[in-house]
Image (tube, rainbow, N blue to C red; front, side, top):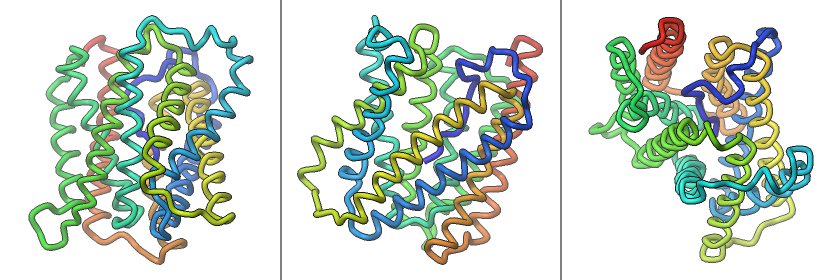
Length: 305
């Protein structure tokens, strides 16, 4: 699942000068991560269990990170003075992909993606009480409208409501808490350390859970999980690189292309097209999210929210 950008990444204070390559790279990264979600949906609807998928994926990505570790400064880069904060963030972060992948058993890909994008507004809302950031009236209005878009997609209280939507909402909340904690820890913890411990935690937590739900995996399913790991690693590296080479305001809106990618892969892979309620709700979510990006840029220029 793509994790929507909800604030300035650690690299965003570098001087960006290549907006077009950054925009194209972000759009490609969203396509890769949406393809990963489509592969996972195929696996879970085929009977594979989410804990075993995430356990195998976690160890594959962790192996790649260990190989990359010497280039990042060796074991010293993993040393932290805030182990409990890192542990708490890791446990919350581990829940996010698990809940999202579970929702894919019953929800169309585009619908699950749209619902989880509610994390954009959750982060903006949580930044006020948790990070003591000033959120002005314009952004509060965008948050409210964005949540209305999420409600339009989920349609609670109607016969069309799917309980699996609660899983996608839970995933969005976990992504939001993950993003807020990244802001909180970003001053002392480098990105590689956070990524490493997230994948280590994912591998360990789901390895403990996997034996209780383990289903025999065919060679094709194992290959598909390996593909999921490769797509996840490439996608997240591409997202990071896009933020390094281009302005945040230019590349962050491109994350919403994942809604288009999800609709495309949902149709190609599963023959599903988003309903009118998903299209309308997604449009509201995108418009509100883009307005939040705009207001954040304005706030940076003025030095307030």
